[in-house]
Image (cartoon, rainbow, N blue to C red):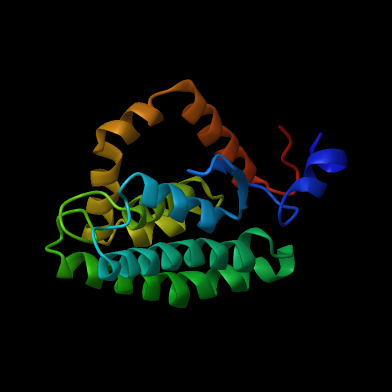
Amino acid sequence: DWKTEEKARAPLGVLPLLFVTGENGKTVTLAETVVIEHHLAKKFGLLGTNEYEESIIKMLHNSSAAIMNALSLSVTWTVPEAKTAGLANFLSITLPAWIGNHERHLNDNGNNGYYLGDKLTLADIRTANVIEQFATQKESEELMALINKSAPLVKLRNTVAKHPKLAEWRSGNEYKTLYDNNEAFYRDPFSFQL
């Protein structure tokens, strides 16, 4: 039971958690989404081939995580009377700036659907996931209108979606359930129940 037992044993008292067994046989519990994503990305070769690439990937990954947090803080979790102004600011300033920054990096890489080289990275996955989350928001029409004007971001989204392992995952029932619940949550986060 999370509230009465597991939460007290979690390193920071939050989810998600990942249990990792080291070469020494000891198991450590990792907490926080970004830490877990970086750990798994390193394990599966999604953080580039050198320290420079890893830093660029982490920077872009963080930027995409931050844009989702900005939307959540200014729109999703905002009181109704502030939501209109928050959305207007997000659509006119925050999101266009993020789009421009990411277009620049994608264009610098030849607009081939990846941020670095020609293989999938954690940054590509995070950005594509953010775009998918934008598509599930109550304000999806306005958000996707801006995203769809960006050929490099649309190409990245489509490239990631076509990756064989991700396409296989997305075709399964577990993903469909997760996606449907995510969409239902963002349509009305204050009344959502599983």
